[in-house]
Length: 412
Ligand SMILES: Cc1ncc(COP(=O)(O)O)c(C=O)c1O
Image (cartoon, rainbow, N blue to C red; front, side, top):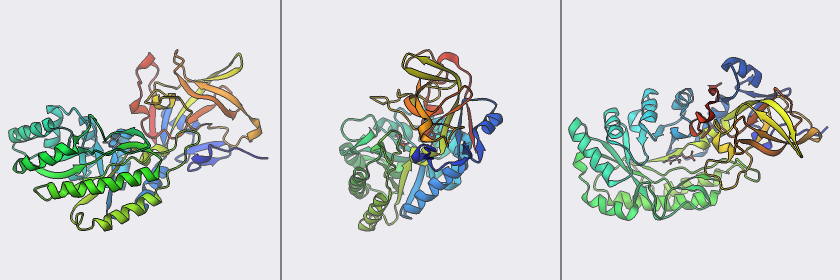
């Protein structure tokens, strides 16, 4: 009998009988562990193998940093710590988490616009590197550093003139609130008071969620060229260039896993072409979702099944308030379905599948988990699983909305 076991692209998870396993446990076992649904579960084997394969493919020279904003679940961040070379943080709270993992301080960078005096002084005391997003931030860091008698570690986030084409989220090129425009940076480098800081280098982050290897290759080409010019224009020796990230993961029908081998080969080529420039300069790649996205699932339980005219609805105990991105309300223009399965009916034969719409418990039509999806026949008590949920899930969702019960997270 032909079976449609699991969403084809989710075969990195184990299956036992009809059950999806996360970290070797069935969803019913995980429910026992955490006490109730809904929950996020992260598979540490998948996480470790994703990072291992990525490091294997990247040139040795490239350091890999994890952007904690993608998933700040503390146990997960501690687990990742020995597997990567550094952390990027986007707030004081993320910075406190990062330093408590005992990651070497010179491998922690603090980026993001709107850093307050409090953020800046905390990061100077901690000894991490500020990625300055504006001239004001540099001035503030110098003033705070003087007051504290500690030289601030500063790198400049550069808003390049180019953009990352075909990107899910463009974060550079044209007018952007991130970084300092490259034209201004060249001027700034002439007048910077290098005595007042440890000037560490440059951060060029052009975009996020990109599945087009050619666009990423073109971005790397331009990033290396710009970096070379910036290094030449700096009056002191720098420690690193952070070339950003942007590697995406497939969420929606028709999207494919990114083939990173041409990207890595091209990086190898760029490194040998620019070998002299980067001889004593580290090159850092900074990734969030590519590291954690595929390792996580969001699981809720079906509490009601009802028919409304032509549509069968499965009403689940989790939804938009825990997984905003899956509901289509986190930057998407048109809502599309994430990969979804019924986690206790994984090996149901394809001919037994039928269409159902999975919704959450919130009294809003926006609370959709999966719209008109082909799934095994759904019953009350089944587990609805949303894949590709390891990044921008719990921490990127309005958990207080409608005062629903709390969410659990577990790394297994
Ligand atoms: C500066 C910076 N670094 C890293 C990331 C992580 O991006 P992703 O999770 O797509 O890899 C972002 C995302 O917005 C970012 O703004």
